[in-house]
Image 1 (cartoon, rainbow, N blue to C red):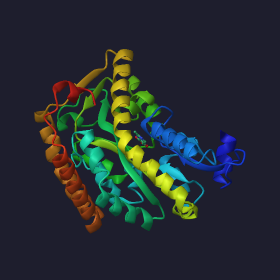
Image 2: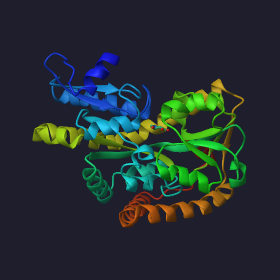
Image 3: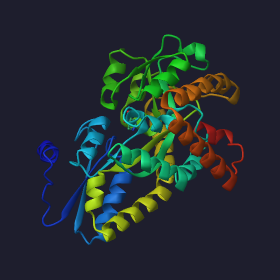
Length: 347
Ligand code: 6CS
């Protein structure tokens, strides 16, 4: 794997017989939502090209951190990668819209429809193009959950709690507004930082909390119902331009199919992994914030929304409007009944 990574960093496509190789780096480990997405994409591309294209999937770390794989896209030394706003926000400030607490819907199914909205996608497309990236898709990976050493039910409970956040500045601002002491770190450094007590908690969807073993170094897992983890699929624009029209259409078709499937994948993975965590650590307290408990967090999130507009500027405000509209439309298309208590508990 290391030799392959070295070849890739030099921009040389590894040989697999005569097949053309597309390298796809993800920000998560094998078995994750992104890994399922990437392996499905790989299978379909290989099948539809009769094996003429082979997609090699590189899990987290194989080609570097989230920032490093994004950089490889615009250097044109990598074809495809997942680029999450939690890290990409340093390069494209506007995508931090997905990090504003309570900006997305509480239900992942609503977010899944909103993220497929053509106007929202077109806006993102232009922003990525400006920064030397090609935007292909945005999708949710499930509700965010906090893992902490002690219960956090009110903003006051966050006092002095060093929460690891992703590296985009708005994640930091959000947890500052919540009253915590946010600490940005790359994904791969979180477990040891928790173990060494350099940080007290972190925030991620349940499947990630299981795959990265964060639940082992926590006493409480809280569902605040304030945000969903959103990622994007990005590509090297120069590579895309080199694809034949037929190959490009085939890729777009596969991406469109996956847009419709990935919501079910994340829902199943998150539910299964919560069961695994509960079975492995029965002592872990699982807390579901009530609507009343969420209210003070929601109130503090208003300042984060205002800060986003202030810091990111008119294009950020326009993207936020697009997102609000897409969510309202998704709600109108399929109004959601109040979530039953059991569904609120299992993301
Ligand atoms: O917390 C993070 O940094 C990472 N979390 C997930 C669920 N995916 C990738 C991201 O880098």
